[in-house]
Image (cartoon, rainbow, N blue to C red; front, side):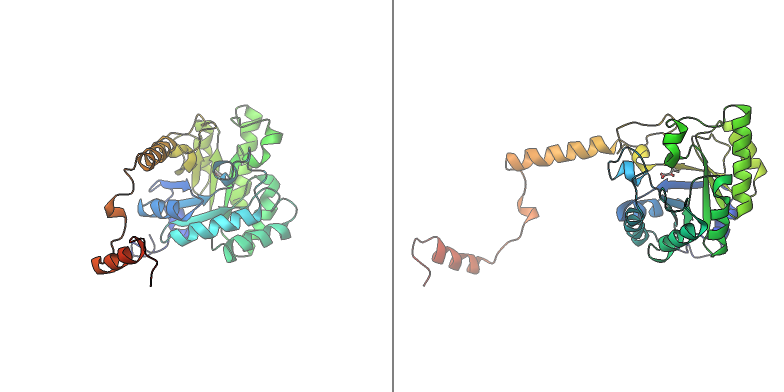
Length: 291
Ligand code: KIV
């Protein structure tokens, strides 16, 4: 860390210095309580991912997510993130149109959202946008391999880079993203040995999701990690909790206790002074109209 203060914000130089020294641990978060939990657990990075669309907003893909959605959730995360570094996703069609559009929307995530850095998807095809955003003084995380915003073009959530040509193209993408000025790169759903080659070739940290153990860090989507999203679980995700089940059981127990009169108990309510109560009872329970 750059500062001795354990509450000091984790900076881009801190993250760069972790390459080869210490694994970077990142999780997605979309709200204040999850941000606080990730910060308190000592993770290095939060991604306010556009996976928001599927995990929180109930869409079938990340494609419908808007800048307004990303700003709303980035602001909530920032209120809970003291030390942890927060990267916010640029959603689909918020940067593809032009460098100017990319800089403007990256600036909104930083200025109005309060993010510490931004992420966008793509390799050589978005190098010019990355360079323009970095030139504006905004730190960028790249994202290559399986890029969910292009799921329609990719034909589904499939492993990328299995053939020689595809693997070479992903290496070229990684190098283009680094050359354009990104300070880290997410590698999604690529073979572990390809991720190792990329990790060894780049001087910026690689953060893997479905990319094996050789990356400089790992990221998981919190809905998968916490067992909050049950529509499907990618093969590469590990569930560390079953919160949907826990939440369902808590709601069910609450309903049972309300229905059979076990909730609320005295401890959950407020008393009234006995003199006040006596007077109220005299006025309202005696059958006489209050005088
Ligand atoms: O939006 C997201 O959650 C992501 C992760 C899959 C890395 O981009």
